[in-house]
Image (cartoon, rainbow, N blue to C red; front, top):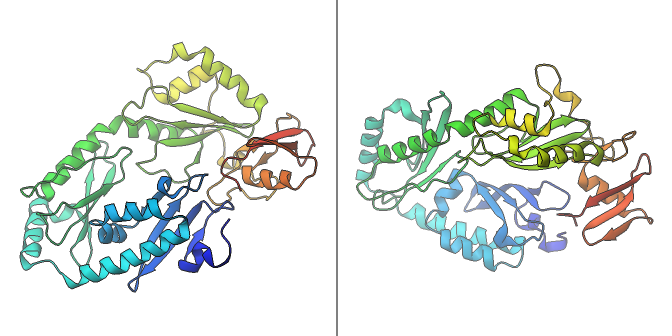
Length: 371
């Protein structure tokens, strides 16, 4: 935990923790009179060099030429608070330098000419400084996709930064002879390569109750699907091979999920890459997933039996009592805090052994990510 003057909120009051472990922060960082959206996900070990950092396009634009310095500050900072101070200083220095040097006049004329060639109907957004724009295009299934391009003052001599909602990283190629048209063509090629993946994920979203993510994006490769009886399966799909066996993680009471694990191991040889992912999963698990056609999502959005809430930050109940007569669901975080307060609780390595708060039967929970 962070406490005292060294806590992140002392540096960034609008960057707030999103979970009790304080490993997820979301909000804004202020520098140079501007506010930038920032999201920081720390690993359980809290190592900054392994943190995932997401930011808005304006912050990406400011830091596009400072990536090496940014990574160096991230790796060398002993804690999150120190890193935020370093990031603020870097933003203020960089913003000052960029504001004093604007793009030359030919930059604007060249940009307008390239948009004319693309067609202004392809332009979804352009910022007032003409340094960041969003291009829209549709794939073969008429899904709409957005490509965000952050341009440098010295474009095309300097490579622009391109971001898109894709499940796999795309290394956009750029030379001084390239144009927005070339970047858009590379984006459209990447879209064509992921059609089967998106078809697969849309079938899951349409035909099953997806608990997480709450609002899936085109880049999300993970789905947590309700199985009933307070159980679910979290699958991670390979974007390059979406019909192959995904990574499966079963969540729920042992008496519910163990038979499914056994079925998966026994029936692996029935997996048919010619069928859809959903059909294969139901076949090898020997279950039929609850469907929106005959069930309600409220049947699976069961609140935690300790805090009485369904969502705790980004966490939903993923632990249940193993006694079939109880099967109460809990947030792992809530269950850990409850058990740690009981004198009868035992801990071995990173596993806590205790009693269910409702039926007093034995229950265990891993300490991963908790403090």
